[in-house]
Length: 207
Image 1 (tube, rainbow, N blue to C red):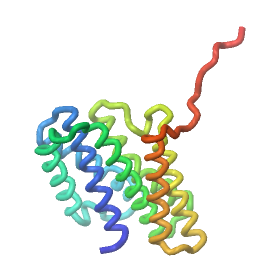
Image 2: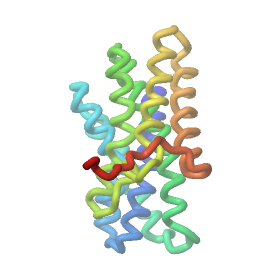
Image 3: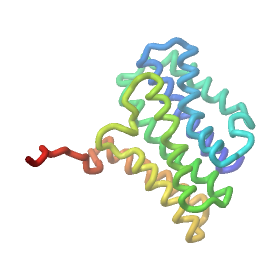
Image 4: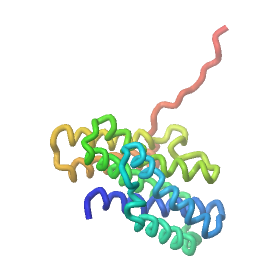
């Protein structure tokens, strides 16, 4: 199994769990769980593959990814009530999924010998779009848009690390490990320590 496959499987599994947790908070049925879990798990990678003209799309080429998402949805459907705080579990699992998915997106772009800009964009799209679609579909404020939190910024920094590592000829495993680690540290710091970017504050108009 290639490194890209491993990263895709990891991000699919963890993002599927977050999608199912969101479904549990919305009190959906089992079909709703499976839909939201699959949308979350496969959405970012699907957009990545479409933009890169990667044919066939990763989960069509290997439907096992669908099975992983479905299994995660089923497991959460029967166990979500055991969690003390589903939201806290959700946001921390999402931070891990973000880090792995950013590395997966960057790895695919690097594998196609894309430019640094495309490597960064594909990392961000793979990491952010599944969660964005998840939250929009269930009517929540997307985590990526939470005021002041580091999310897209974390994805950008991680993907930029992967692109930089490729530029300097570092081992791909080292570059992608740095990518995932930087993305997760920034996201975790935002959640645990309140790291954030400056937020725009309007001022009264001058007379």
